[in-house]
Image (spheres, one colour):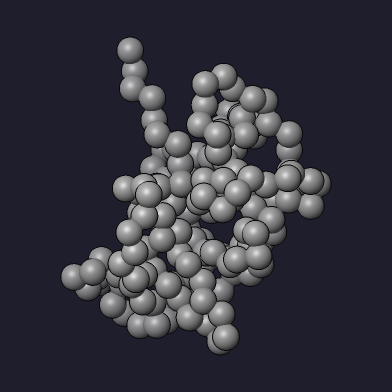
Amino acid sequence: MASESGLPSAGQLELISFEIGGQEFCIDIRSVREIGGWTPATQMPHTPSYMLGVINLRGAVMPVIDLRRRLGLGATEVSSRHVIVVIQHGAQLAGVLVDGVQETFQVDASVVQEPPQIETTTSELFVDAIIPIEDRLLSRLVVSALLPAQRLAA
């Protein structure tokens, strides 16, 4: 059951956290299809700066997104220690490049807080909740906002 804010009001959330530029973020574990090591991407022309290109994952060609750049936190200098988290929203798959996966965990939905209302330079909502855990604050990302816009069929 969701509250008026759209945040869950009861129950447990299962999340996965990862690091980007020294900051911790998390997403719902149900959005994650798999986690793998860095695979070089084939660049595509005329794509947004946060798109590193595309990779072929067991027959499925999908975009790879530099999540640091997508969130406006600078560009990632890719190395073999980076990780690609394959996420899915509806039928759309994409790989997001992160510095490293931290942990999967459960948290009671009652601790989830709305992010502060801050004016941004984009109309997209990337963070829909703040989750305080011990001495850390994790920002929960909106998976659909991370994915590149779908191209309309001609």
